[in-house]
Every structure is written in C-alpha cells, then in structure tokens.
Amino acid sequence: MSSSRRLEPDGVDGNPERGGPDRSFVAGAAASFFVLILLAEGAARWAAGSGWIYRRLDFSGSLTSLPELEQRIAWNARRAYPIFLLGDSVLGPTALWEHRVDHPRRLTIPAQLAPAAAAGGMSVQSLGADGLLLPDLEAIDRTIEAGRAQTPARRVIVLNVRMFAAEFAASAKALSRDFLRPELEGAVPDAALGRPEDALGDRLSASAARHCVLARTAWQLQPLWYFPTRRDAFRRLLEPARGAAAGEDGDLQEAALHLKVDPYYRGRWDSSSVAFRALDALLEAARSRSDTQTIVVLTPQNPEFAGDAETFDRNRRVLFDFVTARTGSSVVYRDLANAFPPERFLDHCHLTPEGNREYAEILLALLRS
Amino acid sequence: MRLFARRPLLAGVVVGTLLFLALLAILLFAADLSSSKFIYADF
Image (cartoon, rainbow over all chains, first blue to last red; front, side, top):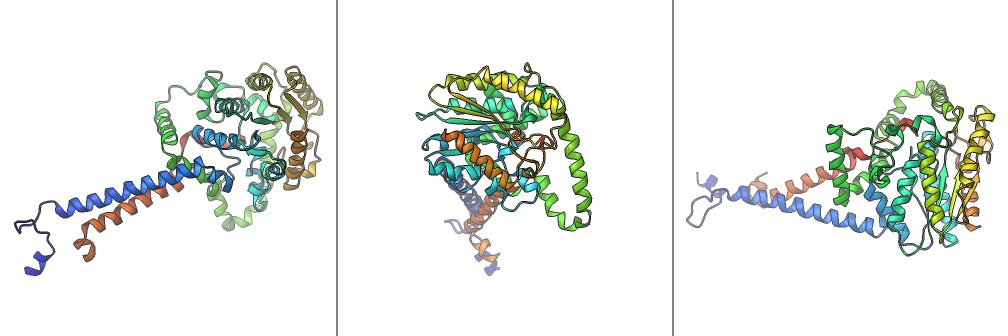
C-alpha cells in the first residue's frame, strides 16, 4: 500500500492532486510538438528565403504551388543577370529517368546550361515542368513580371509541338496547373467550376502552401524521391520482381508513345486557338519589355516522329509567321525543330544527355549574342 | 515505463516529439498537394 502511494503525486495537503500528472503530460506533449513545428517552420523559411534549398537541390521538372513558384522567381531575381527558362518536360529530367539514364537531374538542359552561363555572369533558373502548356507559361511569365526586381530578367521560352495540339484547346485541358489560373485573370476559364469536393481540398492545399513554408517545402521535396510521380516511383521499386516482362514492356511503351504523340504532328495548327492566344500575350509582354531580351525557340523534334512532312512544315511556317509578325528588337525567335538527328533523341522530343549538352550550347550562344 | 509514470512531463515531451515526427513523415511521404496534380500521361 505504501509503495503504491509513493507513485502518486501529492498535493500540499498530502492528498493526490487531481489531474496533476495528466496536466504535465499534456503540457509537455503540446509544448514539444509546437516548439518543434515552429523550429522546423523557421528552418524552412530560412532555407527557402535565403535560396539555400535552390542552390543545393534541383527542382527542374516539378512545380507544386504558386508560392513555390514565386519563391523560386524571387530568389533568382536577386542574383546577377537573372535568366528564366520557361518550358515543359524538355527542360526536366523525367524522360532521362524513364530511359534509365544515371543521374538524370545532372544531365538536363538547365543543369548543363547553368554552370556555363554562370561563368559568363548569368544566373539561370529553370521554371520548366512536365506537362506545361502555353497558358501555363503565360501565367508564369506574369508571375515573374509581378515580382519584378530592379534587375530585368531575361526569359528563354521553349515551345514544343505538343503545346499547340488540338487536344489541349479545350478549356478543361488548356492549363496543366490549376494554381496558375488566377494569374491569367480569366483568360482561361475554369471548366471544372462547381466541383465542391475538389474545391475544398484545393483551397486547403493552396492555403497550406501559402502560409506554411514547412508544408510547402515538404511537398516541394516529394518529387526528389517520388519522381516523376508517386505511382512511377513505386512501379520502379517493383521492377526487379517484374524483370522477365521488361522486354515486352519496351515494345508496348513505344507503341503507346506513338499512339499518344502522333496526333500532335498530324493536326494543323490554328492561330486562333487558346495556345496561340497565350503565345500572343507572351510576345506582347516580351515586346513591351524593351530593357531586356526574350528568346523564343521551337524545341528540336525527332524527324522519325514528325509524320507528314508537309503538315509539319506548314505548322512551323504558321508559327514562324505568327511570331515574327510580333517580334520587335527585344524578341528573338529560332526554329530548332530540325537541329538534331534522330540518334540524339530518346523519344519524339526529349534529347539524350549528349543532345541536351549540345542544346544547352545553342541556348548559351543565343544568350551571349 | 516506470520512468515515464514518475515523470509525466518527460513522457509528454517524448509523445509530442513523436507526433511531430509523424506529421513530418506525412508531409514528406504521404500528403498529396492536390493543386500540383496534372495529367502525367500528357507529358
């Protein structure tokens, strides 16, 4: 009896204090939990604000939230002679990863361009991400302009054939990242309005990304291990167990790729489409920035995927005429569609590491000119 | 366990730390930022 009483806390009158141990337990748990959250939030704010995270990690190919985009822009805008690369998966490591190239993040176009550009005093930051379309690029360009620092930032806009495909002309598919929609101020209407189940989740995510840098940074880091998507990462983990079927998968993947991309090359481009409207806005904005140059390129295409040469050449002429009619002294356009032979490609438009290196050299020459 | 029974504050600190680590693990490995979704098949 006496030994059990020794474990009970005593009040000043010698009786056990009601709720004493419980209160201490709850106080200790709450204090440690919230102090650790505050410390982690502070560390995340410092890492993002100082650019520490961007100097050490390459986030090319992924874009998780508008605040992340603004943070990346703000960091590079503070550096010497900032240059932003705008484009789609051509700028990221996904295709290299899919083709089992070792260290894909070190072999992307931005990764090979940045050191050479830095030697010339230029600070290159890629804002390219998988699946981006022209309205996405327009929204990103507006975000750069909204956060404009004293030093004007140059842009390199990398256009891809896929961006002009009829498949992405409908409002529902014209924008790949919903969080960029407000930046366009109604230029691309939300075809998915009226989905309350998604709206609440999206609002919560957007709010968390805006106000909690810890959450934003955690989501930003996820593609470093779940790349390019969580499903792909798990599938790759299972690959050793599925080794026997790998050969069949290769043939199937190639057939699936052709089925997916052939319509991009077959369709005739319509200069009144959503994509061309966004390109028009991009060029108009570029022309109005007389203090800085914008370089626009049509990214190289694998001739083996180009399909009907007449349609492809006609589409390129439509684009050339459209762009050159809107370029001024501050806009430079280069059609690089035929710049590389088939052996430099991994698929229809993504280049091998060597191709990426040569592409980076071409972009560097344009930046220096 | 007897130590935690005698030191409820310490037990609380340990539990709070574990809760924080669980939250961090959810953010890093499980939470899905819905606004980052896009149709990967279109890449």
